[in-house]
Image (cartoon, rainbow, N blue to C red; front, top):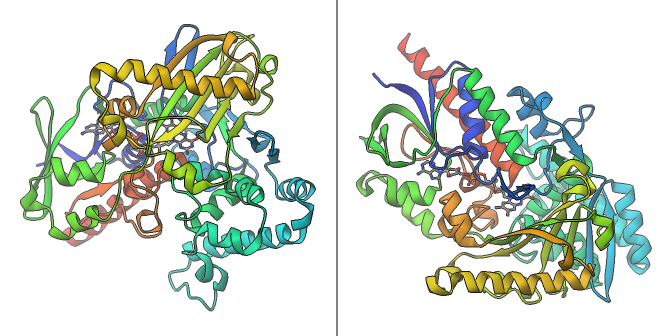
Length: 501
Ligand SMILES: Cc1cc2nc3c(=O)[nH]c(=O)nc-3n(C[C@H](O)[C@H](O)[C@H](O)COP(=O)(O)OP(=O)(O)OC[C@H]3O[C@@H](n4cnc5c(N)ncnc54)[C@H](O)[C@@H]3O)c2cc1C
């Protein structure tokens, strides 16, 4: 007999929601996490008097209590919404391209349209038509989720545009590259540029942030991870930290257990992996148990970007260095293909970066009179692996210095107010997340690797996936994916029990 009904590997967003959902349904669940804290990306760390948010910049899908979004529904069901303090952001973002554009888009449809029309009056009608298309597309897309018979006759806009690239749609509607850039800024949250990003992914992201608002939460994403873990314990779930899983045991096409890095064998019929599909199929399961087809599928996917990240504590309020927005995208060019190629080099010169100052939305994000600022520069892990170890520290601080020069240009006086700074490279993310290349969104988010086509099920009976490698990266998709994996297991358990009756 199995010691546990389900073993969950990894306590990132996907693993935590899967474990919590299962334990709350009375399923005997064991959560095994390699690191010593829960959360994966959804965590924090302390330096001096600052507690730095590692990953969460803008949470999508929450919505208000009056107009709840899908993520609020998932978290509410797990009982954690009321345990946390949610912070709604007023604006989507500020986009700064020196000498060319400085625009802040509010998080409401009329506001975004009016702001864009004021700055780009020549394209006023097209801005209206674009948002009509975006809304119609998203309404139809949401309709397809509930309609197993979805057809082009009922959802014509969805079928026409779902796999069209974001760039194609932008080119169809607009001429000014600055306007196209202003609308496609969120591609950085997906990791692939407008030319490769499906309109479906871009549209739903923009629609979700406008309709359901971007959120942060007090205490950062670690507060959410801790709340999920507490709920899990309250439902009699068991967890072990500092306990990586090295192998998943399979017999006759069926999961039979896992082996921990300490050498313990734990019997189980179901495994949910929050670890990457790549690690699971190429390292954790003996190759003779992995269908050939699976290797072909993996061979067709590429590992997504990681990040070069600066975590900075300022000894002053944001206004003192001219920061008045939470979410700031800093660019130098409208050529997003050029920007995307820069993700593949180590150098940071002229990179397109995200600068978040949490205190604008949440004054408690750092001690009174200070500010917490995080700068994210998406970078692939591979070039970092080529840096000789003895040059690593010198290189990372030299690049950090260059990025700070850029920031100083946008926000004069920034440098002299730095009290604490920590620099994370793709290798840091690799170390703490155990993801290939330190990837933060899973595979590159081309349409074929998105939620539209990837299932949490695997060809091995009893093996399920949750998290960025099982669809899309980002908080909302990964938190939701754990709940989906749990639902699939509950359904399977129910049908097994009915057969056994
Ligand atoms: C700097 C940065 C900025 C980001 N900004 C945003 C943002 O603004 N908005 C947004 O939505 N998303 C953002 N993301 C991305 C988002 O945080 C991730 O996509 C998401 O949190 C990944 O969740 P996951 O469920 O895939 O698990 P992960 O966070 O990858 O966690 C997986 C867990 O599994 C554990 N594990 C792995 N292998 C094993 C093993 N063999 N045994 C046991 N445990 C194992 C790891 O230790 C880890 O704890 C950002 C990420 C980073 C790093």
